[in-house]
Image (cartoon, rainbow over all chains, first blue to last red):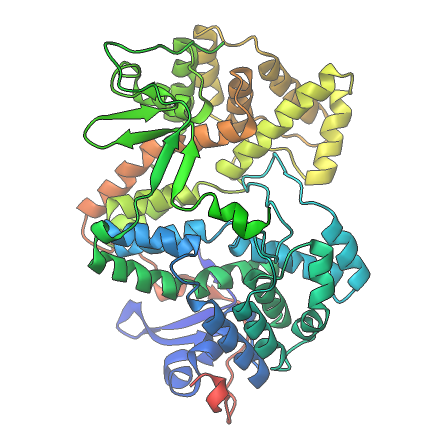
Length: 272
Length: 277
């Protein structure tokens, strides 16, 4: 029989129904018999991804990160995308899909976090490696479906100095005493910013936190996508209520406007 | 000019050459009036014009269309199609199911990621070969560096049933003489004669054909986004028209658990105020 292999989830069927689980165990823990009563959502989330119950400081770090990321606010491109769904009355899932698609990117999104986490894996707490790496401009890979990031991952391409919420988040998370990455980043932030020529961004703090939580870059990418959805959802619903007349439509300036066309208009040359 | 000043210049407006809609009046598409200048374009022509800004010959359009048609299988076992079908059986909407299936088609071992990789390799290989590089060495180096070549080899089976019908169409349309086209077969010959034993799949062939049409890797990748599309609606519709939940139902016994043994949550779990409760 073909089966789904899993190290995460174990089920026992009800005696009278093979399609209903009598018990569910997540990484060995009884979900409905025990975790439901004894674990927090954040602990359960950590367990699902990392396979072990978190230490108290790990749970506190993930909780803090979840709050910091939960709502980047309506100016964020991913939330903006979700609101575009909400304002037109699109389905709820499409609003979240829009937020995921836009928030997946290498500029402010999950791809950026993943790339920054790869940097943490390669450079660790070696300042010289960071300074050398940050001096190299990211290059486009024409074989990749991901457009080239225009800035080093984890830094704000348009920032002037490190934004207050980023500083607040870094200071708080670094103070939780979970792993060395955040503390090292907190201590060396100015030097790294100087090497990058840009201020640290929230993606950089998230990458360091996820690294301290023992996540792989792929796990970090997923968690970042997941943790930013609450704000996107709430703002999409809110804009649905406000309606499209209260939502910016913006202005377009066409550089090649043919103007109102009389008759058949101009024709295009055929390729080849 | 610093970052915020740069962004200030773009607040509230977009300057573009791609197009715009003038409510109640007209629409402009890449510098042409959509309803007059482009009114005779069919959908595929318009799609490719939107991607490249160029217009393609009827023979080229016919081949691109063939590439899409021949890869559109209404088989819900295929991973991307299964998403559309599962949406149907779970009584989600057609748009959600099919667009999610399209997104899933951007995969490493098939679809979008493989397509762009194949196009990039063939375009780069042609430039290198024309500059005097030995193709066998290039293939060897590519496999060593990337552990494979996009467009060669295939998950599940090695033979690709789409090659023959596409080749027939390509010959019929007289598009079998391009440099990338010939190079794609030369790469296959090298891979078959060497220890790799990899056959060309439709991705390399279509990447070569589109490169010969002048498409860049990114243009090709976006053009191919619809390659599986026609097979998806039948998967959704079949599932949505059947009783709910009957598509590939999974009994508990189909989960093969390979994880940690049963254990107890710690006696004094993290329920301090900072611990998440």
